[in-house]
Length: 335
Ligand code: NDP
Image (tube, rainbow, N blue to C red; front, side, top):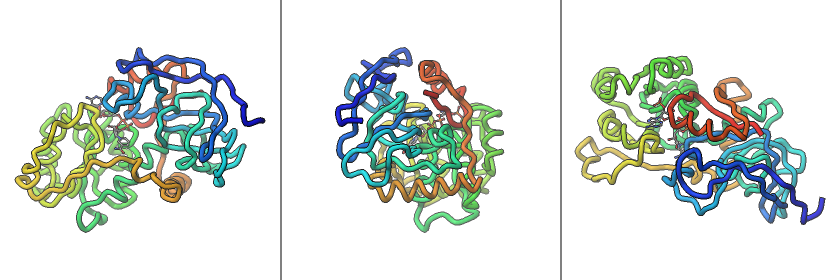
């Protein structure tokens, strides 16, 4: 292997923002990693709702661009200064820049971790972005005074990828998680994963009233809201005084500009708009977070629910399914 080694790889690329039909499978030359980078041959890539925001322009990217923020595979080459990985290692990551929908790629090594032998590539590819998100939400994004066993939180889209992992994690922490989902079948999956209560917010759009009933009028300490525009108002109405609103996604559309006075009127609420990638900013933090996730999966406390599998060439269908809300748990593209 020389420093000029390249190979022709299949990569999913968009040339302009738009619908799933913009996703094109193309061949490009992938070269060697530079300083601080690693080259990975993927076995599987994770599907995430953020890939839709990249594709449709909600989170703008320079064009053309490849997509995908999560993957698992084998290290093929390491760049100068990378000491925690070696050629032949099994590895998994959640990391910008987008580009995981590919047979192989080069990316910054900082967030790439060795994948324990007892965790499959498919599970590794499905769990890094979604599992680390569930982790930072429930363990690092906390209300005043933190969360104690027995506390009640509201978690929207609880049967999705992040959602089904969060249900299990919350149960392991002793939290009473109220999960919302868009069908009775999805609600049942969230319940089985550990949600103490479930609400079908399509048949019962006034979920805040149900939350008040469940909490005997108190409201919840934290709302974890990735649905965005459709749930914003109800989420604020579900919070106890001094409660924390965690707005971490926009599946139904971006939340309109907020009048901060609303937070005062609804009980001195706190508001945060976090992203996983602030938490993964250093190698040490990435590894510490991944170690905790790996331990939870290896012990069997967390089961990563891979419920959709597509060949890389069927990425268009994968995006259609995610947008149509027909998916549950995690999805992967197999390379
Ligand atoms: P999911 O598998 O949860 O899919 C999104 C879900 O959102 C759907 O399945 C659907 O569930 C629900 N939803 C509600 N309204 C709509 C709508 N109008 N259109 C489509 N879906 C809708 O995705 P992920 O697990 O990948 O991610 C969950 C959320 O978390 C996303 O919004 C994502 O962007 C966000 N996220 C944020 C991160 C951060 O750090 N800020 C990191 C990772 C994810 P239902 O039918 O049950 O309503």
